Image (tube, rainbow, N blue to C red; front, side):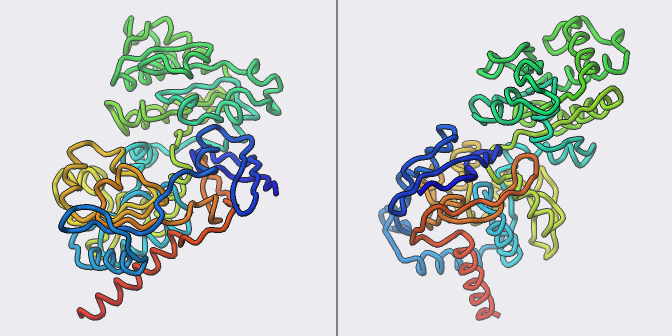
Amino acid sequence: MIIKDVLCPFCGCLCDDLAVEVENNKVVDVKHACKIGASKIMGHDRIKAPMMRDDKNGEFREVSYDEAINESAKILANSKRPLLYGWASGICEMMKKGVLLNEEVGGIIDNTASVCHGPSALGVHEKGLPTGTLGQFANRSDLVIFWGCNPVQAHPRHMSRYSVFPKGFFASKGRKSRKVVVFDVRKTDTAEMADEYVQVNPGEDYLVLSALRAVVADKADVVPDSVGGVPKEKLVELGEAMKGAKYGMVYFGMGLTQSRGKYKNIDNAVSLITELNAYGKHSILPMRGHYNVTGFGQVCAWETGFVNAVDMSRGIPYYNPGETCSNDLLMREEIDAAFVIAGDAGAHFPAQSIARMGKVPVIQVDPFHNPTTEMANIVIPTKVSGVELEGTAYRMDAVSLRMRKLVDVDFPSDEEVLDKIIAKIREIKGASS
């Protein structure tokens, strides 16, 4: 059986044109996907049963779902400052339950944006986001800029589907219709494919953006001979090219969000795009990583008013990045329990945060073994969203799409596990009161 129009549960492109062949309730082939997306859908060695770490020898032993869920509920119910982290590789329906769980335990819920595009949200708070949809960009853009991102490696089908190669209504010649420019600190694979590569000194993106804004404002006379390692002549040339574009598009990644300047880089980039809209149509979009990290921002904002790092210890949502983000809490040693779901803190947090997380009980909910498993006390395997479970996910441009179920498995869904943990916590707290 061939299932068509399948969404890929890998990256923020959320490609929706896959064809998946299923035989005897098993995926046997995936067409149109990148190698990474196909690998995830095909599946690999997964956690086969719930596990708890033995207090005596530190080794895992298999337990029942009820035992793992009940013990997880006890840890969270008795915790004074639990961190609920991850929420990027799962469906929106699960995320809503996560916000409810955070309310029940008075913890902090934070997603993977803390270590990638959290600064993007702060920049948008200050300046808004002149943006659109990937379909609009594919049909209209004649100038494409990748700034601090490398889609060839991180979003393998982005250039072929949305940004560089597709033939569009106003870009009928595809790649030949577009000028592609890459701003980055090193020559990436994406830069190798671009018409122009602009090397920026590490941590000096803000200065380069400011110089481009001066050029766009016809104030090139105030620009020094070199800014951020880029000659003035090149900055003037690029600024004029931006002003002359019919539809300019800037895609930015962690080269902007996690370098010196952080959210102020995004503030400056958005300001540049806003000013360019006096000359033509221009948009900007963050290159989101996990396939539904954008969805968590949407769900959390609906439920709490904030996109991530929401502290419910006061009984009302409190949000203050720099104080309530995961690594801030870990560095201050405030956390006394960690619940990691649909994310991998062990792979992406700084070593100091990992060391401090290792001192508290860690609960992991995930289909697959990953670095977080190595520090977990309880591991609960669940269904793979978009393969074994249907649900809603948001593409990087905040367009919601429906993920499909391809095969049946005996594992519970994230949502079912969260429901049971919430019910048990209510039971524990009811008994104690």
